[in-house]
Image (tube, rainbow over all chains, first blue to last red; front, side, top):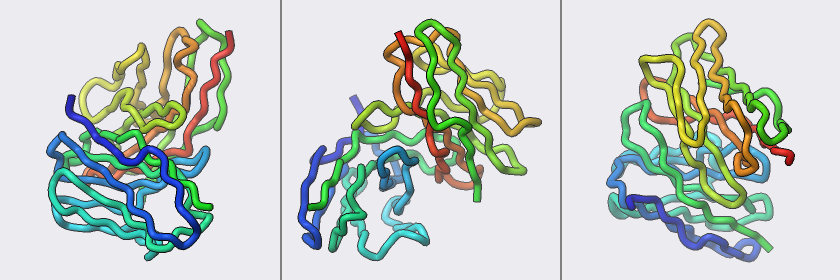
Length: 113
Length: 113
């Protein structure tokens, strides 16, 4: 089945230690999104890629970076995780045109010690 | 920017009772509308969406929603709740230019035996 895969499902890191989260898709969608979701809150969009074009949300901290080496893969890098960055990180994909659903991966739960 | 309001962060119903989860959006131009469900420690799964056409939309697991332009609403209903419906539900809208989602704050549905 076509899907969105996130690895790892659970990640523990230390305060200030860089961490990379991975997302891959078999849907061949143009757009890939990264969301941060804290407990009992709505997903918050961090940034998205339309093909290779990177689009950062205005309020996304500089500590968060992303790479998309090809259509299938996208990475979220947190350069210096703080305690406030502990959250669920969701990857999603869609076709570009408005009205298309976003397909979500299962998420990576990040713990910062 | 769009905004989405979900009235009631927690809703509790008895098994077999009607489920009604409310969603209102703010936009002068009707957006595209979505309902997603999220089970603990999982990603979001699409229940249904409205883009054009019939305003009553049927989705998976017996859920449906009705788009009411005059009320700027897209409430989610299910005639008879099942224990497996216990989850968190998110309403989302995207504007008609690009597939960027704006999520409501979510409603946790509890189903009592």
